[in-house]
Amino acid sequence: MLDTRKTLLLSALLVLSVSAFVEELDDTFLKTKGDDEIWLIEFYAPWCTVCEQLDPVWHQIGSELKSLGSLVNVGKSDAMESKDLTKEFKVQSVPTIMMLKKDVKYNYSGPKTKDGIMAFADRVSGPLVRHLSSVQLFHHVKSRHDVMIVYVGATSPLKGNFTSIAETLIVYSYFFSASRDVLPKEVSLPSLPAVVIFKDGTYFTFNEESDGDLQSWINRERFPNYNQIDGYTLYAMGESGKLVVLALGEEKSLSAESLRYKSLVEKVSTDYKDIYSRNFYFGFMKGSEYIDGLVMGELSVPTFIVVNLSNDGFFLPPGAVQTERHLLDFLNGILDGSIQGQGGNSIDLRAQRLFYNIKVTLKPAFVKSPVYCCFLISLPLFVVGVLIRLCRKKLPASANEDDDDGAILAPSLRRRKKLTDKKSD
Ligand SMILES: *[C@@H]1O[C@H](CO)[C@@H](O)[C@H](O)[C@H]1NC(C)=O
Ligand SMILES: *[C@@H]1O[C@H](CO)[C@@H](O)[C@H](O)[C@H]1NC(C)=O
Image (cartoon, rainbow, N blue to C red):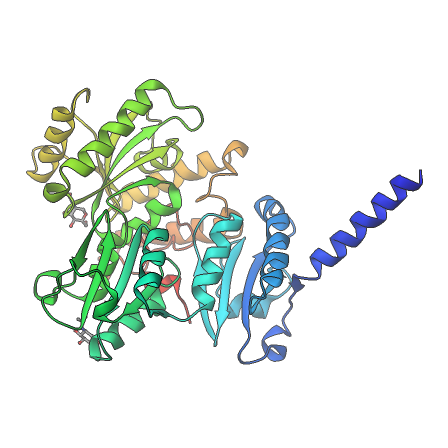
């Protein structure tokens, strides 16, 4: 009896002490917060089940950051109540996770896991560009990052560009700087300053003449050549402009055939890196839910598919892909135009995809799906948006079709959003 009571008391205390690390924020927040404070904030709504599932994670994050002595304050805010705050942060769906640092807001679009969110908080709260002051530090960091973006050299206008790009892309990647002597001797740089990306056991040096502008190049190259891919990663990869070659396997336990597909795509990505890495990324994805939303149908897994995230287009192999040769023929067919692309982002297709996704989303089983989870606030709004667009289609074409998408609120339909949207200020 006493023991039960003790346990109850203990757990009550535990809940109290844990929740003390997460502050409930309302509309007074912007007036009361200090100028130099850094905040990690979750916007939620009482009826949102995903938010409810996130709650224990959020409290863990709060207490863990506190025990690490982090400068990051953790808060949450009821989006239904704090209208001003919601407006200020341009919150359009729940849960939305944002970071506020020096009045700049950073939007988190990765998986809603403790590790993902903690890493985001670490990236954003620290310096935009982290200096690697020694050979040891360089090797240590390199061993922990699949992809490492490094500015090499002294202060220069290029460094200015690099830093301002970091401000946009820090939500996804760390940015580093180092002097030449910190890099391994075998790295050959034609001139300094330079921007170098280390990945896939090699490195790439930015060349303004052949690579164009620095931000597009970093966006193009900031993923590993082969990757285990989820919906979030795929969405982010839309910015790269490369096609993504995917082997799709089962969601849970992989069949032998799926494993064969997986090793085939991995092998081709490595063995033919020099030929294909300019145009393609490669990956393996568990479950086809996300891709089903793109192709508007249920693919039977395992299968191969190549997606063009720039225009929501896709390519399916013309026949069974049994061998490496088949896969190479498939890729070559895409490059030489002999394999016809399907899908796309015409208005009609976008509308169809919208309705397909609504249909699927409203099936409760899909509530857990990462990209469709946040529909509810936005659903009525973007249905209206689409209706407006559909009506507008009858009018003379508007000047800039692509930039005013009625479905901005639904990431499933806008896999590719302008990066500037993600870092709003
Ligand atoms: C750096 O930024 C300036 C001004 O925005 C731009 O004109 C220049 O092309 C940029 N340089 C690179 C290498 O991207
Ligand atoms: C992918 O989409 C972009 C944007 O519409 C287009 O320019 C490009 O040609 C497409 N790539 C292929 C291989 O179809």
